[in-house]
Every structure is written in structure tokens, then in C-alpha cells.
Length: 201
Image (cartoon, rainbow, N blue to C red):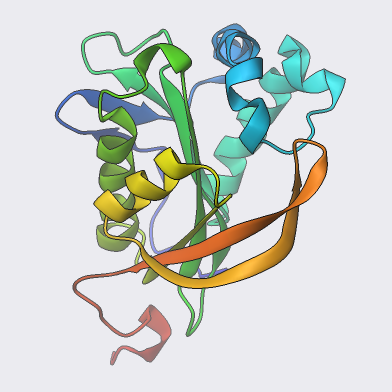
């Protein structure tokens, strides 16, 4: 974890059509509604969800925890909203997690989209906006993203966003009732610079 140089403010990342932001704990019902409505749609690609995952008290605590993780330079977990409807409904989620600083300057990307807006290019737009923020504002160098080989749509989205295949991991994650292989991809900063600890001054 790096030493913060100034107080952190939870970001609001705008793209052409979207706003990416961290909801307040009081917005937990909207998050629950998003995941509840997409249980079946997300099921083939998600790890097992414990029952509290679909409860408001769980998400009220988790949204507060997500904001603390950003302030501690550990993750940035955002939800997607239309720019013209910044308070909802939620269109999807896109997250940067597992920050590693020092000479690695890396994180992991995860994402999910509401079934009603699939095919409109929202996730590509959101990923491009979030990775630009990761490189330009968070001093990250590498963003990793992995997907189940049968998730053709996810692989195509990552390719559109510039992610390149790095390898193939067998029995990588327990997804939809079995250990699933994953394709490993990554995107690196197009304007690379040394990590802060290696910069003069």
C-alpha cells in the first residue's frame, strides 16, 4: 500500500453515456435490486453467493467497506449509472481490486452488467473509462482480467478494450458448481512511467 499524498475523495468517472461511482450505504436497496434481478443472468459466471449477499443489511455494510478500501488504496468498486440518471437504476458493476503497489503497480478487474442493457456497448465504455482512471489518476501500470473460456461475450469485450491474452489457468475458480478454467488477460498503461517509489525527488 502506498502512502497517500492527499486526502482521497471517492471518484465520479464520466464517460459519454455513463457515470461510474461508489454508492452511499443508504443506496443498498438499489444494489440489492440489481443483483436480485440478475441472479439467473449472472449465475453461469459468478462464484457461489451466500444468502446474505441479497440482503440490504449486507450491502449497507459492504458499501461502507468498499469506500474505506478505496481510501486505504486497496480497491475501487463502482456501479454504473446513466449520466442522465445518476441515482439509478444501476446498470452494472465494474471493479478494480487487489491493488499491489511497489514495482508491480497492478490490480484485478471484475465486472457485471444488467441483462436489460446487454449489447449496447455499456461495459466496454465503462471498462475503458475505469482503466483510464486507473492509469492516469491511480498510478497503476497493469490491470488483469480473467474470464471463463465459454463466456465469449466477455472475451470479446476485453479484446475491444485492448486486453491481451497472457495465459490459460486450469481449474482456476469455482464457478456455477464446478472448478472452471480461465483465460488470463491484461492491459498495461499505454504511457508507462516508473512507480512512485522509483521516481527522483
